[in-house]
Length: 144
Image 1 (cartoon, one colour):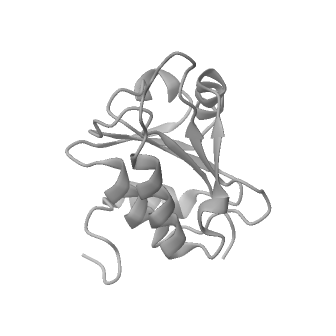
Image 2 (cartoon, helix red, strand yellow):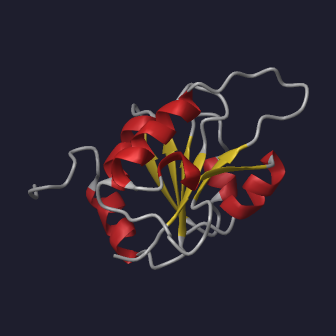
């Protein structure tokens, strides 16, 4: 146990966050995301039993978002014709606002298949049990 580290952050995840450098990306994936196939060149960390918001909140306590890019937090766009509602995105923006003075301005969207291509280049992918659809978020690490 360490002081100041959220309990939800496993030793493996803490190590990965420490190893990541400026501009490296990490994906916090919902339960439907193909983490293993997208993460063939990444470190895949299982966080079964947890949702994306609680993991996002814990990570942002330790992890600065990149200030050299306009949108260091990317969400997977809803596919045309898919009438999905994404209230979880508002939750993400509230969490990000707690840790980054730019708030919701840090959040952008990226087309679904482009998100997959970027996820393949991520340093790590966290597989959660999140049930909300279009709940994937990709974070780009900044400097302290």
